[in-house]
Length: 380
Image (tube, rainbow, N blue to C red; front, side, top):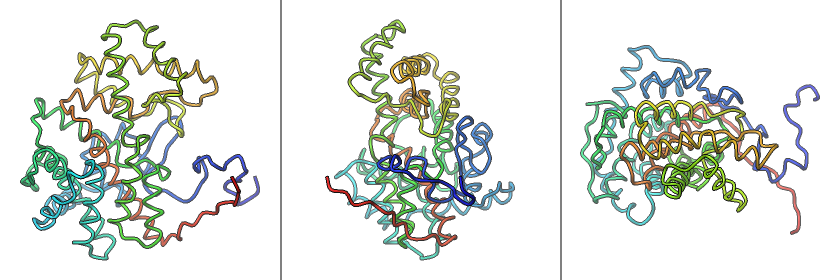
């Protein structure tokens, strides 16, 4: 490769969804093919021991904060509440679409009502209010009520859980699971479609509120935010067909038949990895420790080894047949008592919003150019 050349594009790269084509820099995270996702050089096995706000501080400041710095940051975030005027306006956005779309529209509304035209201030405003907005969307869909806030009383993540309209039997365990999922989903390099879309929209001098809203529209597809739900549905189908006691050969046959019908095995494969997703590894460990007897968890643990075997047999040249984070995340939420799957995409969007905002925040400071890719003209 010539000196200074980062990447050479051939016609074979066209119509590949920009796969592996470099388009810029990510200041917050990167993916190692064999070690998984890293946030500023920290692996998830280190990060999951931290409080979510510590991780948010790391993503925005580029370094770990001292105990005092994180404490001040937490107070600023946890005490920044949505106004009653904004929450009342949110009532008009729900019941007419799905929860994730309602969440996306609420962020645009927030920008219309509270935009300060100061990048840092607007970013902090979004991060602070994400949990309350998400909890309000769920409450409005469930019973039309606006939840009462418990700002600063129990922490960034726990406040969200306290505002949920669900009766969770093991609230402490669910809280630990939700904190884990938040950290694992905060960021995912620069190439994830929602991050890329958010950055593209932002490059046209669009404010952070609308840029994030656009990113979440991209995130709402079946191949992204609904992947955990699709994976859970696959587990439920196999569990029902085999009654949970089927032989490995029976499960493998079901999976093989799906592949022959060109159906996807959601939860398996990752374009940037060559091993099992480290996020999946951590969630499998959590599942074994907290819900080992749940039928869907037992099936997910079996699928962890059977699905890669079937994929490798069907596609000998596949680069990564192993489990990704979606293979177990939906099953864990279900086992934890949150059985209303329509809210899963919203919960993951709540986390991903942090990483999207962080990447746009850093890119805006660099004054990145307007994204304007070239398309070749070709008659069909």
